[in-house]
Length: 102
Image (cartoon, rainbow, N blue to C red; front, side, top):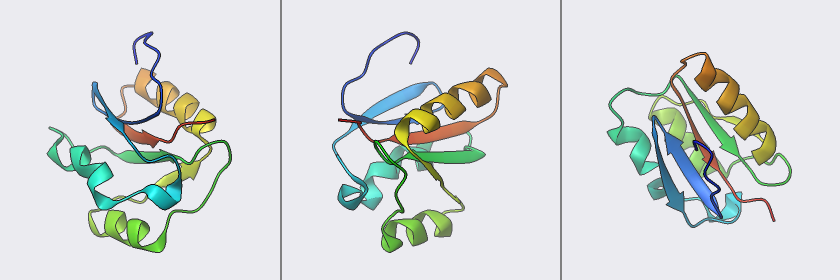
């Protein structure tokens, strides 16, 4: 986020970031991923940082993302943020929904 500190959950797409309100994977809805579908270029990889520990997505959200052509990579938020940063430095088209870590 270019040196900025962000509180709460956030969706990162291209050069933009969008605050989102879910605090856990159970709170995720299809609408939380809307900015993915309006991006100029579709991301190659979608990371979902699931909070302090890796968790599975609710089945409906997983099926929704798969139907849109995304196979989300699930990991804890810290690992997702680190991996996202490395791939961005390699100029890869990546996106991430990072849930807050309490």
